[in-house]
Length: 313
Length: 310
Image 1 (spheres, chains in turn yellow, red):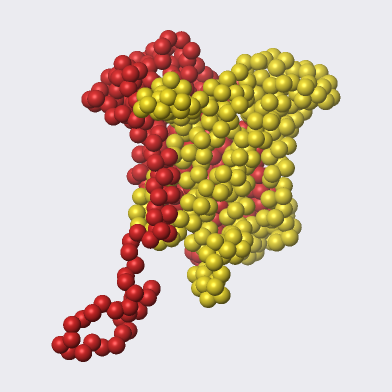
Image 2: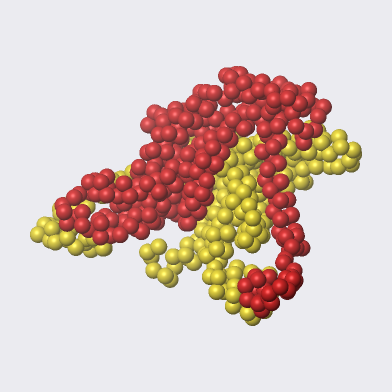
């Protein structure tokens, strides 16, 4: 099929008609050349590297990726490794809390910001600025605030509140909450912005109709406005979700996996085994599991977004 | 609501009669609802602002002041000592030259990778909208899908590729990696933008005999300033804030600022100098913060545009 630009191709097609196969290839040649970096990236990086990783996750590669094929051995070892299992549990725990709270707080703040308040832009600026900062900066600031002796805990004790305890960062049971505080600080503003855009996109008439019918405001939000914001919500969930799976920098900066291995996460497991653990097979198997997780998040989304409605997004 | 009604549409007041206030009192500013709204917003604002305050105030303190004082307290006097040390002499792993080398490395990484990735993405978007060829949509779909693949999946093969190319451990490797991973979102941005421009412009230029590049440089580029700015903001902040690629690909002598910062603070040796650490943190956050404050609403647009689907 001569599939040149659908809207603009008429003239080009006329020119091309007298030619043969050669002409089909040459047609749009500058466009094809211009798109070479993209094609190379897609084929080499996104497809090629991914296949490479999946393939070598089935080998017993140690320091170099030259091992022989060992089937699911790496995966079996992976799931009997304490550190990996803790990483996965941490990610699920942190991920669930982070997703719910980011969406919840983001929505709450967006609703409050939508009440025709004064100083809206000042509030917006304050809430979003952490999003501009890197996870490393975020992690290091909160590491300092949560420093058990000199941080918030020390300050409160100095003020005379001797029993005040805020040692989450050094407490294996609470360290994920420490991570959560920093993660929310960085990401809630972004979610708020998305939700606010969603709220502003809801027709004013809907509100009037709800008011006429005497529906309480909270009820309108939950039963009418939220379902209407489905698109924004789905986008937010996908973005926050894939961000959670990638969680790495924040952990490195805030706790470096500690205390002990109580705040390890899969992304960190992969990097550690890849570059300092010298066990590439393990790292690649772990990476493949991460890929699988993202696919599980992505496929329903892609289906909702692109399925049924035709391919052109 | 009802106050405005009484003000505009009430019975005329008889002349000479003292004007008595009528109708319900105007709503006071402090209704329970407003108090709720503002106190919640202020509470969260404190949560968002507190770290900034702590960062900046700690960086101006001396170490004794930090040890015996409170994290809430303002510095006794503004002391730039920690800032100078963070910039020139803090130890970042093997060397003790401060953050300055990392800053310049970050600059050398950010500028070319921002320019190259935006340029490639602009051409991609243009080709995808106006010069579709067989398979172009499929490439685009994989590209967008690929942007969700965790970086760890592609990390090791990319190390091997950059090693083969002879750039592993050099800034070029980091630039290449940022260009690659910036491509999906930026291509999406430009594609959507070019699709929103009137097709007639393109057709007219075609009829006049202009080719691929001419239309791009003379018609499309001049019209795409707004989206360029958005892309610029996204890339500068994104690349500046990167840690993983810098840590893996830059090699020990070319570390970008974020990697150096993490080394300064999380190095095990010596007694931690919290004021230097915080000064270093502020310094590293300065560039994205400046971009954020200068670009204002455009930053929000950039964030939202990047969120559309990628």
